[in-house]
Length: 210
Image 1 (cartoon, rainbow, N blue to C red):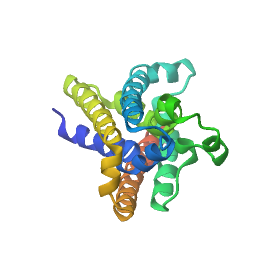
Image 2 (image 1 turned 180 degrees about the horizontal axis):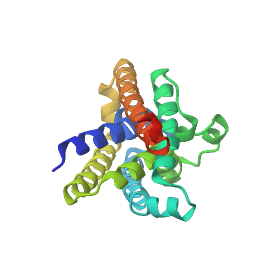
Image 3 (image 1 turned 180 degrees about the vertical axis):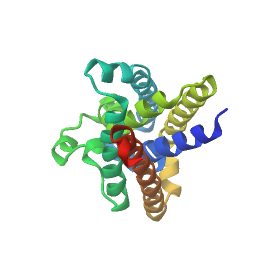
Image 4 (image 1 turned 120 degrees about the vertical axis):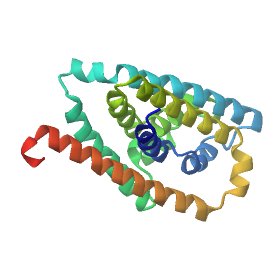
């Protein structure tokens, strides 16, 4: 297995889909639901995330081609999106592209019907996740890289579902300080990966910079 590809992809995707930093959001959105309903929402969210994310990974490049957008164009634009999300994480702020504006948050549906919107889309599978999936699916050229891609994505979705399924238990043992540290650390990792995307996109679009 291509370990370098797998590690880089895991770092980028974990920073975006981070179960630790998304745990408080899950709890706030499902706070009115009993434990049994919360767990059903967790399972549904994991399934929806796997299906939606997998769909973008499979057909994302074809959709870009349909609109005449090259992967390098998308890499540059996606790098900017990821960098903005990373900066929000470093500043301790939520990204409205993933978590919604204040107005959108106030209009979120009842706890029993939040598995797809807003938990799966746009909180888990939002612009940052979609960008990461499309860029790395395009990079996965060999069989081992494709296996690594599928394994990392499926593993992260499973981890996310497990954390959400046991959300009340984890919440009791996870301090606010730990969540802040994790958010800042993931923000730094995501920022570094975003800069790499920007650099690769600029080099491809403007060869004179290489």
